[in-house]
Image 1 (cartoon, helix red, strand yellow):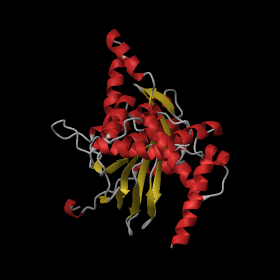
Image 2: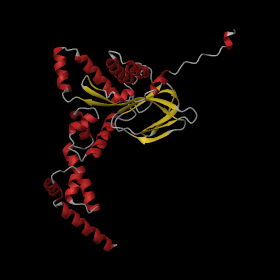
Image 3: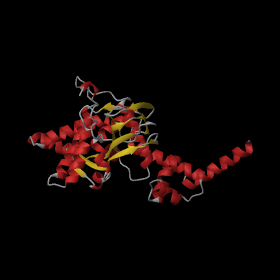
Image 4: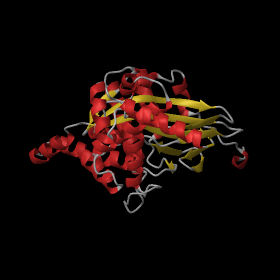
Length: 332
């Protein structure tokens, strides 16, 4: 046989087996500590986008990794659109809007991993203790810290999976399928390897971190405001917001100060008051119901705060607005 005429042998698609039980890894409800962080898996599966499938802009409160093992498509991250080919991946961090579309002819497969990464409250204190004692956890903590920081600073564009994070998806699935002793440890290690290998892709040949597509402090500031605005009616704290965007409370306060917010609590109170004023003047809802809806479980406390800020009670403010609005209509 003339070897020049021989057809290349097509390799079987290695990830097809993951379609047999697509939510297998998610059903494990994985949650564990790694360094100074708690890692919780929300989604971890292979999914297939039919040709031409379009998913509109959306965002998550967690980190979501998107790997493309087969097919083609595009992704728009914030306001830039990129082509996707096999062997590429991208990361959308908390609050980062994105939309996806599959190639009209080929479609596209995606290995998806969405994880919640939460800093453990006493991580800094434990780190100092480990540094002094020389404990083995010091290395893990430093590695986890560097990895999470790289994920936070991840560029808003696809990269090549040059450190082969994708095979870790298959390895984890096969470990689950085997059910053998040590399977959980293998799955946990695979997850950590995906995080690390994705983070390593953000470092250039000289070991320098690739710059994010936007100035990182501005991005963190915008993420913090998004979270505050979405959760202002709960018992929100500076630490909770800092944990959500994966920085310390001291770092967050410095960023807020840089952008003109001297006090987290005063900004939160001001934002609540603005929303309350809108409802007072735009509805006939009772002050009690408005108070509860906007984070004041004690109506008397709302009266105190409102009086201190505006010199009026909520009812007086509403009545004053009605009078001014009525005079404005008559004047026109």
